[in-house]
Image (cartoon, rainbow, N blue to C red; front, top):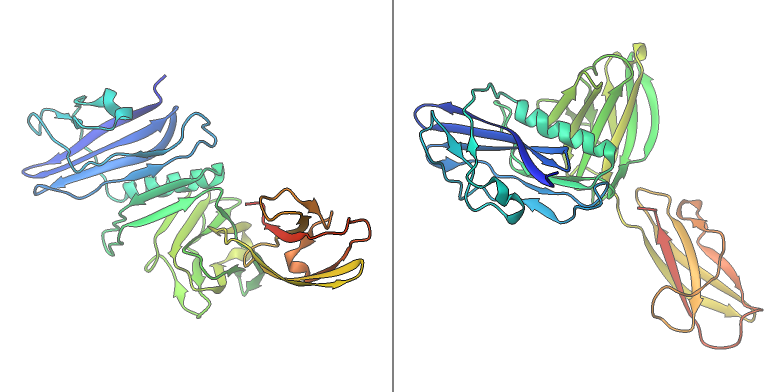
Amino acid sequence: MAVVKLADLGVEVQFPMYLRAMGTLEVFNFPIAYAEVLYQNRCLQFSASFDIPPKPIDLLSGEIGASLSALKFSGNYDASLHTPSDLPWWLSWAENKQIGYVTADVNNEYFRGQCGIILHLLFWDIRFSLAFKVTFGAPSFPWFHFAIGTNYENLFQLFKRYVGDDFVSTYAVGEGCERALFLVKSESGPVPDFYLVDPIGDTLDQNSLPYADFPAEGYAFYIVDNPVPGNWDIYVPDGIRHQFETFVKGPNIRPTIHIISPAIKGDENLIAWEADDIDDDAEIYFFYDTDNNGFDGIPVNVQSIREDSRIEQLTWDCSDVEPGEYYIYAVIEDSL
């Protein structure tokens, strides 16, 4: 079985100087992504790279990427094409393979294909990064990079409500969020043309954001780069007559904690701290140790303390601790 292979290769040719080649990249029989290269007036206008870690394909790790900048064509345009002769080692078996000539209507299917991959990988919970150019015909969006998976999570939903007949759900987007995915899932039928309202009060829709819908699966979503921190609303028109689920996926923001110098009072020491986790309710643990190396100390608190609980101090009973000099450290974790 091939580890990595190109499948469903095809080209679209228009005379005199236009060529479009496309195919599917498969890894262990998983269709990972669609690759495409456009050759027009001696200018290659597309390249893509893929980063696929070993989950859930345990045997595969590292970066999968190929530069198409040195792509060479041989033969006549209307006869045959060949893959490059300088592919990476993991695609060396495909060097100089002949590609059969086909015709195809492209339109916006490439963008939909890429969004489809994002959608499926999002629910597979695989870390995946993808760089590509999105062209809609009217507005042209620049290159952008999108990463999803174990470092992404559902952002916190503050509340949901109805405004007239519209279904509205509100999500908190924190500082430092580079990109967010706003999704609506329909329980029955296609998703209506929903829109977003940002914390400033601006309305964002398909005219201003990258958008993809998949009626057969009942999903649709927007991609928002550098979203304004604050409360975002998802408006689903006529949502009162249908059932919907909404999600907002964003990068997990690391929690922080700072220990204030402990107050020593005999057998009882007061440990105070300041902790923050913008997008999660993190868990806090304290330990003491005879050195400041590693994380192999003895627990001060057996039960975790929730970062959102507003508890920012605890009393450490040292009556059973041997006299000496100890280091106190904290561990704050949000499970991601």
